[in-house]
Image (cartoon, rainbow, N blue to C red):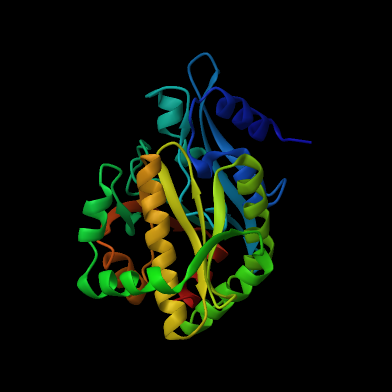
Length: 304
């Protein structure tokens, strides 16, 4: 049974026109689990719900935590109009007070805040704007990338796939190559998201093969404004690297055909950021809010 706030969120979503991918209730169900997310609701003077902000309510090391949903770059304010009512302006301060608050917000989110209550840091994504032509896209690649992709066009077969198990194996290989920890949610959340994308017709898994062997894959999604690079994986050799770049080139051109911008989704890992920038992608900032209370303050110190 849905909570009152989640039911109100569904109602606002239905009346919001063309919401973004991360705002859709099915995305929140897939990434947080049914019942694993909630929403802060903003009201007008007549107590009519006018805005909502979704979040993942969980526990970290036994501490209550309000976070961005797994596999989600940021959350965004859902509203019917450009509302400036006092209740919606104070929405952030009305969220549940947990030991850990770790929330990323959409870059252009119109969410007023007070620095003293919500210290904000900037993170960066990398995008290729929607008004970029196919010729402009390729000309923005660095020379080495252009050369590798021309060679890849003659070498690899690109096709849509439903082999999510094989894709997850490639993802784990990529995490190991980058000496990064595999997220605990990977095996549960990515298949659920893939199922949702497939059923709603707004995403796909694309793989690259050579001599019948799959060596790279990328999972992409889209809404009316943006195409997203959600995840990628590859084998640990040079073929895997060039095939991965070729798949991203393929996804970027598909975004161009849809008339959407392409979002690589940010990474603070220098090597990954440099790779995205080799495609001519430009940085775009988004907000990262962290606040700790009680035992959460000790936890935050132990993470440094």
